[in-house]
Length: 248
Length: 248
Image 1 (spheres, each protein chain N blue to C red):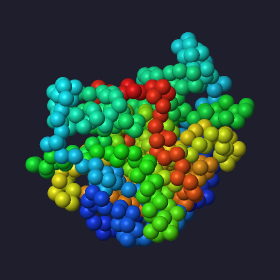
Image 2: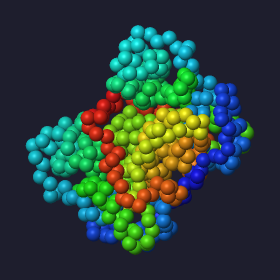
Image 3: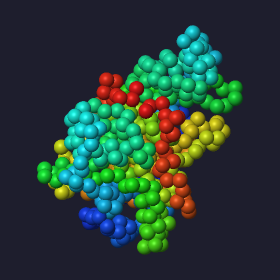
């Protein structure tokens, strides 16, 4: 089985209100039936107008206190708290939360710009699975192609160094493949249980992206078997239930 | 940038003592300069004779006790303890440890066969980075090609459902790319810090593998920039130091 990963070329800068699907459908290579389109969270958030000017944020007491402990901007911390359900860990420089959608990540996934004088930050999409479904439906409308859509972001991990791209939203593909009960070619039952395909697709796509993040959209070809007619359960299905999670 | 993932066809069953590099070099497609060769842990362990017959294992008191708590075979639990430095979490059906090499995973990465009457299990390689280095050197000898080698295994994760392939050993590539201090195309400093490339490569490779695990070796083409002259630090460099780990 051959799988190809290729970043779309020539996408323009994305601004609030842009029709992302239109930009993607017009870029090269053209999307085709069975492709999986992996879109970086950053441009989805931009198109959805999720940028916030820190100058407009008034931090409350809890934010001021956590900002002191973690040596962060209290206005950014206020946004992190607004986007979160629980703060799991914090120390100077680090705040790890469970977001309202259930993702465990640093800073509630908020990207801060590092341009001096630019105080805008970018929140995650409100509901990344809904974003993926809208994008998929519009891509089908514009191109006629039935594709899967993954919205990816770079998250840190427990136990291991470095970030890896995961799926924070998806539509039109099974996010996980349940292999329990299957057997290998010698007839042995497979011990591997559930493969987190949507996360593996996000990780794979990141490899073909220029590291300057100038290439936010990647086509994954050769995995048409994973593309479904229905939108499916979305990447939320990859979140481990809190009461089954040893590591919160 | 285009990246291709393709599983090697026609590899025979691997037995203890086999020269894995010879089997890989003889398979199609042939390996070339700049390829990254991703090899499933299972066949590395088999070739290195890491299968153990449970009938030969005498469980001690600690193993018997933990086996009771977790409802597992006490002989398997003894092997898990032998391969581990610490047991991090346990409950019925689950034992999560830090292995002697430092990997946090279920059952110390030991694969149990599910054939009734077959009591053999397969341990991780003693030192997967050393295995990757040997494989790389022998591949170079046999084919003349300078490649990177990744040894992959499927690990569960904190917070998210399903398993994802990670690198438990590597040689000839930088396991992580430090992007701190880089800038994006608008001149903004990148906030993304360190990309766990070796893990993303392992995850990507798994996508092109038939799910019956009949295809243990995958070539990754198009990432020659990541292939290094030196063997490099190996996948051990991706293990987070215990005192910097919030989630143990």
